[in-house]
Amino acid sequence: MDRIIALPELMYLSPTTREKAVIIAQDLLRTNNISPREAVSKAILIAKNWAVKNVNRAVWKKLRSIEKEII
Image (cartoon, rainbow, N blue to C red; front, side):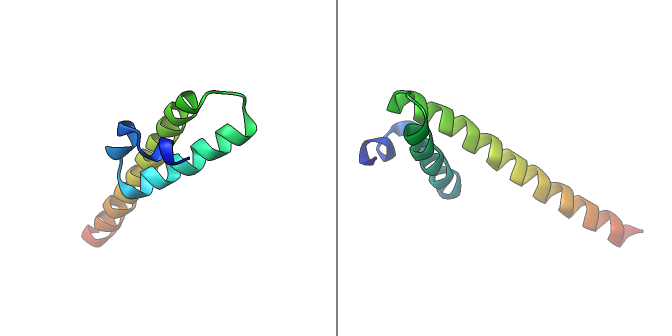
């Protein structure tokens, strides 16, 4: 798994998203018959989507609280 961590695609992710991608890649390698490269690519996409959902939810909550303060 050390080779996967050294991939440049992972270096551009935030630490939390990178950690999530590595965990997902490990799970994909254990459960599917795909190459490590494909597992990492798929894991990066899944982790990015996860991060975007978390950010969107946090922004939505913040906007909602600001809206309540205004009213």
